[in-house]
Each structure stands twice: as C-alpha cells, then as structure tokens.
Amino acid sequence: MHTLKTTNTFPTFKYYSISDNPLKVVHNWDRSYLYIGNNESDFTAFKTDFKSGFSKENLEKGIQFLNQCKGEQKVSVIFIDLPFCYTSLHVFLSEKEKMMELANVPVILNIRNLTPEEISFVRRKKMADEMVDFKVEMDSINERIEFLRLISISIAENQSNIKIENKPSAVYPDRFFLKRTMDIFLSIFLIVVFSPLFVLIAFAIKLESRGPVFYNSYRAGRGFKIFKLYHFRTMKVGADRMLNSFLKLNKFNNFGHAPVFLSPENDPRITRVGHFLSKSGLNKLPSLINVLNGNLTLVGKDPLHLYEAASLKNNDSADRFIMASGLSGMWKFPRFKSDTSANKENSKTVLAEGKTSNAFTEFLSKISTPLSSMQSYNTTSTKGS
Amino acid sequence: MLPLLIPKKMRKEILVIDDSKAIRFVLQTILRKHYKVTSVADGVSAMYCLRKNNLPDLIIINPDLRDFQDWELIRYLHNSHLYSSIPLMVISNQSEEQTRLNAIKYQVVDFFQKPFNPLNLLESVDNVLVGTAVHKVY
Image (cartoon, rainbow over the protein chains, first blue to last red):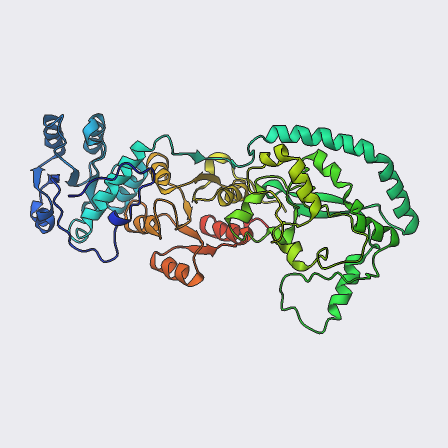
C-alpha cells in the first residue's frame, strides 16, 4: 500500500518521476478519475489502474458533480477532452479553486483538440496542470499524475521555506556592520600611527629610483567586485615588460597555460628599498586605505588576482567572495633570514585558494576570535593546504 | 560603444535554479544588468515560481538538486507540454561525458561545467535570448 511521504522537508521524487522506460504498474490505490468529454472509448487502456471513474459530457455537469461530492475526496484526477472554450474552462477552474479538497487534483487537457495558438494561450494563462495526448501518451500517465500531486502537496507544505530572490542576496553576511565599523576605526587608528612611516618610505622610494610611489594591482574582492589594491613600489618601472622579455627567451613553449610564476632569487628588477620592504611586508602597508574604502577587511583571506578569480573551482572556494577578503591573508611574517623551505613562497602556496600558511595570521586569528567568528563563511586561515 | 539598456518592463526573464549561494550570486550580479533574474534554491520553489508567475524565457539549472536529483527536473520540463518550449541551460558538477550525453538527450541549449567562465555563459545567454550584436557585452 503506497503511503505519501509527507514528513520530509525535501522529499525525493525519484520514485515517482517520469521514467525513460515506463512500465505498466498496477497500484492498489483507491483512485478515481473524472472524465469530461465524449470519447471515453479511448480510455480503456489504463482504466484498470483506477478503482472507479466518472464521466460527464460537459463542464457544467462536471461542476455539478464536484459540488455534490463535497466533503469527500472522490476524485484524484480530472481529464478534459473537449474543444477549447475559454469562458467555460475559466468558470470551471474558478469553481474548482473554491473547493479545498480538490487543491492537489491535477487538471489534464487533451492536446489533440487544441490549435497551436490555444496551446500557447493555455501555457501563458496556466489554465491546466498538464497537457497530454490521450491517444499516444497514456503509458506514463500514472507517474505524471503522482508527480503533479506530490509537487502541489509539497508546495502547500513548504510554503514558508520557499524563497525567491530577485536581487543578489548574499551581499551582507552575518554581523557585517559591526565588522565594518571596527574596520573603520582600527584602520584610521593604524593609519595615524603609521603615517610617519608612510612619509619615510615614500621619501626613500622617490630618492632611489624614478617613478611613482604606489604600485596598484587589480584584485577581486567581495561580490567579485574588482578594486585597486595599493602597494608601495618595490621594483623598477617597467617590470612587467622586462618579465615578458624574459618569457620570450624561454626555450619551452607554455602552450597557452596559466601565467608562469617567475620569481628568481636575486631579481634584478627589485630596488634596494624594495627588497627591504618586501621582506618586511611593509609594501602592503597602503592596503589600510583599501580597508577604509571597504574593499578589504582586517582579518580574512587574501584577495585573489583576476586570473585566479575567473575560475570557480568548487562551491567552497566560490563562497569566499561572499565575504570581503582581508589584510591578514596577504601579510607574511617579516623574514630577514634566507628563505628556508618553510618560508619559501612557491606556486602551491600562492595559488592555494588563499590559504596562506604563516604564524602571523594564526596569531591574529587566535587573538581576534570575536572578529574571526564574524566571518561565518569558511574564511579562517589554516596551516598547510 | 556602450551597450543599450532595455527598459525594465521589456526585459526578458531568466530563472536560475541552483543549490549553492555562490552560483546564484554570480549569475544574479552578471545577468541583472540586461535581464530580469529570479533565483531559487530548490526544485519545489522552482515549480512554485513556474506556476504562479509568468513563464521565464530561459531557465539555468543545476541538474543535481536536493529534492530532484540526477536530471529529474530537466526530464520533467522536457516531457511536459507546458514547459518544454522554454530553453534550458545546465551548469553541472558531473563529468563532461555524462553532462554531454544527458544534455543531448534532453535537448538542452548549452551546458557548462564547474569551473566555468561567466563571460562564456553571458555570451550564450545573449545568443539564446537576443541574438543580435547590439545587446552583447564586450
């Protein structure tokens, strides 16, 4: 005996779906149908699946019949096999809507009687739950009826769970405004504290090599918005062009793969001041301005380059764009010793979806557990990859 | 040259059905400039949308949903006369062979695999819904 599964919040419809090889199944349900039309002889094929059936000649008699059996659910399907008439069908459907017992009963029209314009009309105005060719497509009709009934039942049950979004909704995660205010205050404080350093570094860069003080790169932040990330300039002007000339000299062809991470040990493009800045991490200092702007937060994963952000690898790594990426992800622990294997930046750690492994971010995450708990979207840094 | 912006009442409608918030967010942000996008988390709310509101001009769907698994909702939409006229696009997690076979079987307009380039999706959406160079975004 079949029982409706109405306890699950997400019922699986797999059993009841329209299968590719529909078998003729005989069910022991006490189902009955109501047939409205003149050609009941076409129905003999599946009459055996229903316990009982009623047939009426036109829609008014159908309404009378349905009104008679108020209080009992006598009918589980309604088939209509008449030429299309808008007014009578509209009246029939409005009468049917008033009766609560027939809420889950699907109304099925015969598509043989309808012209193409009428078919599109029915589609637009939603005058039927299904349109079927009564001569040809009756093999899978049982499964379709059950499918429609379960859908209407589950819609009625889960009415509160149905959420329709018309705008991008995941823009404000939990406790966003708290985090933002803290970011503003802390960043203003830190900028004021570090302002003499700013001036000194700017002086040093200007003195050593010609060119601008800031080097800006475009990263993808919260909501995939592209923003300018400010750095102090550590290399000579035209570093990208010099890199391209190196790549052209390369013997091996890259076959159009992702850009190569070329960072030689004693890079000729780095200035002396720039060397000190990158080792100590001070070239990332102007990103406090980005925190003020709202592009970054203080504690979070590092902002990705555009070519990394363009490939959404899976759901988890795509979720990082719901929350703003953070300063702490970029900040490496100051290292003045030579590059040991633990500190070495290789392509794995750089590309590893922003999980930069260093002691500083872990320290930050430990002392700022209220801050880090605000980021409820998998943005805590982890050791290793 | 800037692409033209269509007035809101004349825009075509897209329905996005996907489990993951990130994909819904991405598609909303990309597509809402030129189209009217409604996004929905599971199959039941998708059926509710289809029944209550106007029919969309395109449906972008993830075949593996929580309540309709393994291309079931796509099978239903393809087999029912009410909804078979709506073009479908698929973004799937499965292997490319499986998605291709199923996509040809259910006559899906275009299919993408994760990871996908959103610009490719935008281009194919433009091709399906408008088809002229005026509304393409470069």
